[in-house]
Amino acid sequence: MRALVKVSLLVLILFLPFMTGCDKESDPEIDKVCYQQLDAMNRGDIPAYMETMDESSPVYQPTKEALEQIVPVYKLKAEMEGLEVISIQDDRATIKVTQTTRKISGPEFIDNRSVFEHKLRKVNGKWKFVESKMLKSEKI
Image 1 (cartoon, helix red, strand yellow):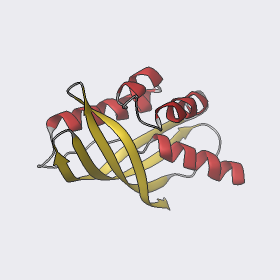
Image 2 (image 1 turned 30 degrees about the horizontal axis):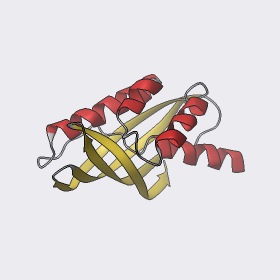
Image 3 (image 1 turned 30 degrees about the vertical axis):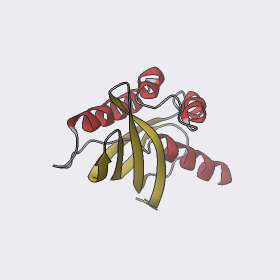
Image 4 (image 1 turned 135 degrees about the horizontal axis):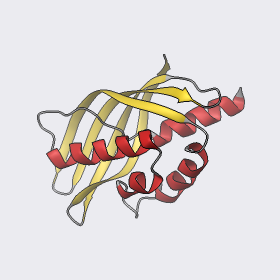
């Protein structure tokens, strides 16, 4: 059971930045990078997923390593239920999302609905994910 909780939390961390909805105040380029990351994870494309992250982020390398462990084992489907733009200032943005993550195949996994706060930064003119914080999670 402890391993299941550890794997579930690890998967939650990897799915933190996924978006599929947009807010009227959102920058279309933020929506674009969110769709790119969601699509990459749902396809299991690690290089495409990592392209959406800021390489200078302290979670960049741990995220890549976690993906390399999870992608071969699980097929998961993440979907957004909501996106709220908290702020966009110059080259920084903060957004809050509600998402569901469900197992399609793989070992035991806890399907869940979670709320996250994500921080993005423009790097060479493109929005990239820098960090994420889980605000709430529940089993579904």
